[in-house]
Structures are given as C-alpha cells and as structure tokens.
Length: 95
Image 1 (cartoon, rainbow, N blue to C red):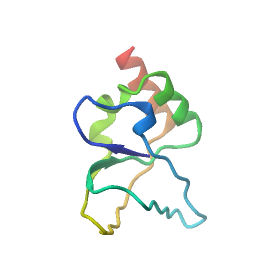
Image 2: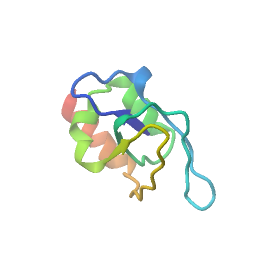
Image 3: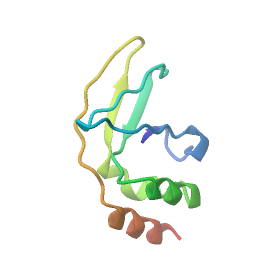
Image 4: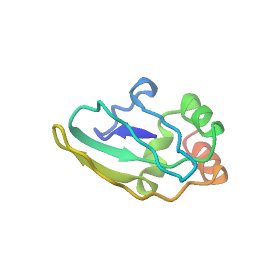
C-alpha cells in the first residue's frame, strides 16, 4: 500500500494498493512526484482495517518506508510484510 506522506491529510481514497507477483515483486506506475510512505501488508483483511480507520497509518508509520518520487523517476524498495496481528493491534490503539 502506498500513502501520500503529508501529515494528517490521509484519506482512504488517497491510498494506493497493488498485489505482488510470485517472486514478491510489485509495480506501480503513473504516480505524481512527491513523498510517499510504502507498506507491505498481509492479505486483503488489511484493507478492511484502513477502511475502518485510516488514522491507523499514524500508529504504523515507522513500519513503512519513505519513498521520494521525482518526475519520471523510478525507485526500488525492499519491505518486510507486516503481520495482520500487528495491524489489528494498531487499529485497537486508535479506536
């Protein structure tokens, strides 16, 4: 999941999602330049957590990686998958 990194202005419709291939790679294109935070989340149940409360991003912010995209730029990022249990705990912290 990719979230624009602009403080508290996080809205569920601004989050971008993609799936990984068999090798664990993913690709996103057509993104506007800017600073983003990238997260690797386990399974579709993770999306439900963000629909319930997008503020959970504030709790898990340190688990994501910051990505600065330049116009026409490319980047490679390596991530560790956040277990669903950790995401559920973060959701409880913001409720």
